Image 1 (cartoon, rainbow, N blue to C red):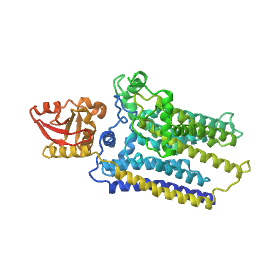
Image 2: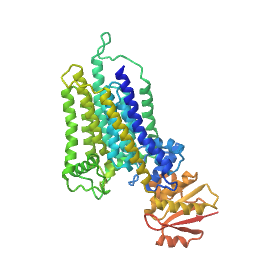
Image 3: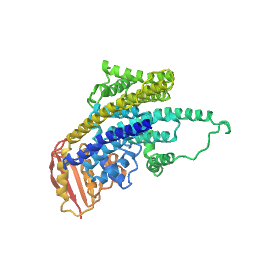
Image 4: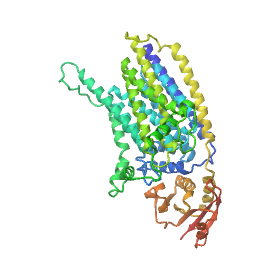
Length: 552
């Protein structure tokens, strides 16, 4: 009874502490971020996609500059309900992103919880909060698809390591978490494939072991038949449902034109002039990302320096590889199936990290493999499983330390540490949210657009990005117009950013044009009949003129 009570309170403290760190941040975003805050660029396109998901009108994931989209829209559909409930603007989008990160973090705690292992539950929550504090806080408040992978990757690894129990819900949960990663960024495909294969092997072995211990009276090799549990059915339905939009998009497209076909064709046939990273360069890149967590380093310049291997980076890489292998070896020696499979999962994840880096097309930017920063935290969770299995074996009479770690004198101090970590994490995340820079170019351009459309009675607006470099500003304005309820179309040259469904010939009665002030295109457009120069907005990409063309 006492163990059960300790397990309940450990879960309550751990889950509430983790949830509070993100929940308080959501409150600070909604209450303290200035109302004029606006996203531009990728984040604005994310907001636009979430608006589309709110009306079940989004089939694909984030766009790519290579002319295809990432496989699926699951991230957008997760963001859509809280964003809509919280107001539908960019502040609501930021709050929704923090909320989803918080829910994924709580899911990690729930996934590792065992009623008889209160120390494990509290320890994992402490590791998770330490990970949040060690990483740049903006990664958990900025709504950007590479950052969305962090908590999702940790949950995926936790579920993959748990599949060794032979549980169908654990297997389906792993596949669902893997679907979230693969749909949000195709660069995680090697991770999802290798780790899922490892988890699949552990699942098959566990099911075989169950059949081998079938009670007398049943046919040899035949497991007892049982109806699928509720969670098995629910997770199975969800797994199928999340892949319906991209599959339908592919099947409804002309042959060789669907997004999934374009993806496969790109990775099989595309050759970038800059080439791809070599295996040694990929190892250096992975080491640099791993070093972010233990050394509390920032990610550095966008383009990673993979010309040399600094000693601290090499040490981080070697330590990660050694830790994963050690978990496998000690797990087998000590009879810890959890420790063994945690090590196997981490070995697969590290191999996948190198493969992901090698398959990058062109310049190797750190954000393409930022999910690798999760591995040290996942390793700590695996080590905790191994140690507690060893202690439990000793208490059961097997060789091992005979320690009582599930008692109040041990649990209470750890609970205090977890609560303190929650408070510090909430402060760090909240400060990062308040300091996240608003796109002042979008703010200024939106003000001009509002003035221009104030006296125009229309429900449809066409946006023409005459200067391609101004797309981040235009994306922010389009996102705001859609949030205000307008139907917005774009020019053909913007298809890869906004999607084919938003492209039109430009025959709408109201046309907004974004062009660099003083450029030849600007002067040419002003000579056209019916074109009005609404004004010039200072932006991060230089002075930007907003032109208005109204036809009757």
